Length: 381
Image (cartoon, rainbow, N blue to C red; front, side, top):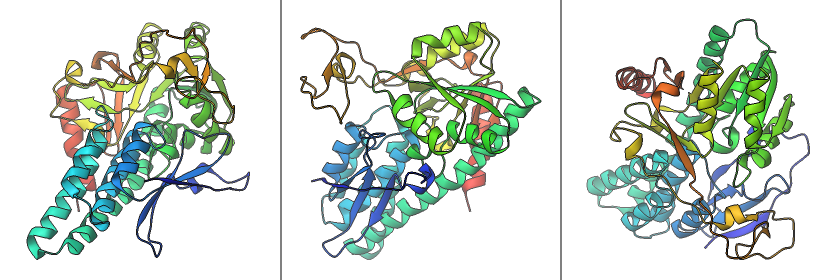
């Protein structure tokens, strides 16, 4: 199962220097080390997974999260099962089912599983299969880092086209930085590129209920990178739009359907409605692996339902409290909670979808399919 070990880092260390995930091979056998994102920003603690079951639990608890990183984690999880001599098919199915909305997880699992099966069929050697699965996971990890660089460049170019003159005031939701990626992220990477180019005036960070991933993680990354940012409650976003303080909305995605419908952390759809009413660009930034052309539309996306205690309690690892879910109770005992992890934004509310291959705008099934084909050409040797 998963062991925990504390790690410390210097106060000036940037998020991109802190590995969210890494493969290690100590004498006792290979492991997958994860930065436990449920403990941030109070402390940096690693989870060390020695089998796929431990990784499944880490995925479900959101210790490791974010669409691109889940794909990488899933691929490494298959490699870990193979290297440790576990049933690879069983491990792959368990990993795929850990977060059903996040299509990248399934993509990563299947890619490593296919590499394992191909090597096993060719050689009959499980060790060769394990090596092939690990090579596939490492390749996916590297490709995601490279895709992050290209998404940042395409996204910044689009911002400059839509908002000439710089001084961008960007609103973002959830967390889309180095903590969700093999590189510097998706939507956050665009904001970071604007910051480095001297064109970011303010990053508005939604706290992002129910797990406060904006407050705990995006603010953490923004602070580490020296960005000008302000944190706001999710329901304060409307007042920012009304005051004319938002120039663009940048979000990531967990699954994009063939028609351009976007599933992202719950709260994204209301931002799209606000952006449309106030004539503000609403831009989705995600790698092409997040686009699922086999899912025809938004109604076909399975939306994960999270435990109610994530709403009725505040999860704060550094606070010694004990509600039913282990957090600080903020609602009466027995309160029922509606807690979808995601909502779905229809394509007509999306200004553009940016991938490593460029941007689709307007967002239609045809423009998205064309962009996917272009992006896959970029990443295919």
